[in-house]
Length: 347
Image (cartoon, rainbow, N blue to C red; front, side):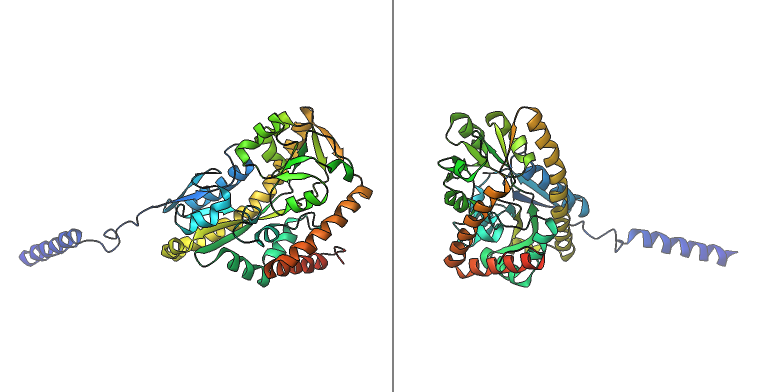
């Protein structure tokens, strides 16, 4: 009996001792949460902001809060034209940007983002281009060594609203309109007078007559910016920008400090966002187009014979763009090769 009590006491002592020792699991320090900043080129009212919120929410949820992304709207803390510089210098750890804002960084960036008045107009076609080894090599070269490219996304076709009716090539003559590079090159070829105006200033510019037309994002974007209130016509087909590449980028030094599993999560969230941004953006575009027409906007459709003239002039611009930089020439070759593979008559 005495031996039994001693044994029970010994077992109880060992049990208490085990409880007092630090657990290998419990003693591990919880990883500190990372709080990153990401700059986008939309305002909270438009899809170029709301669609990227999906990405930020996905990263926060998929990492269980280990990495959170705080969004900053267009112009904060730098304009989209300085997104590469801003991320490289660490003003934000990430940005969503597009080559149409970055021609000041490299002349090839504009055509890297989109082929103005090009034939390809499907999400899968554009990702076919973006996933070619040649395009990915140019992506890395254009953004430079201080940038990690996270993912490509695709902007749906760009809306074109006007205060003047446009139904033929001649109607573009002298029209003051807001656009970005390299779409401005085609509009100039058509006889229009393009300029760049920052997103928050477009409504006032239309209201004051500084511009007479606007080429800006999808229908949901122009509706969110209330641009239908200061224009009269929807111009179709959406020829100037059937779709465009957007890029999710990160500061390379900051990216390299992330645990490998978080890097993988952010990459997968970027890929998922590309699908969501395009598909949901298209659905919202259809709704916004109807709402704008219900509010009084009239539809102007440029007929096929006039579009043929426009496309012919656009191809002259492609030739000019290809002659300006080796990178631009390579991108246009990759684009045309992909278009041929998809069955478009580009020769």
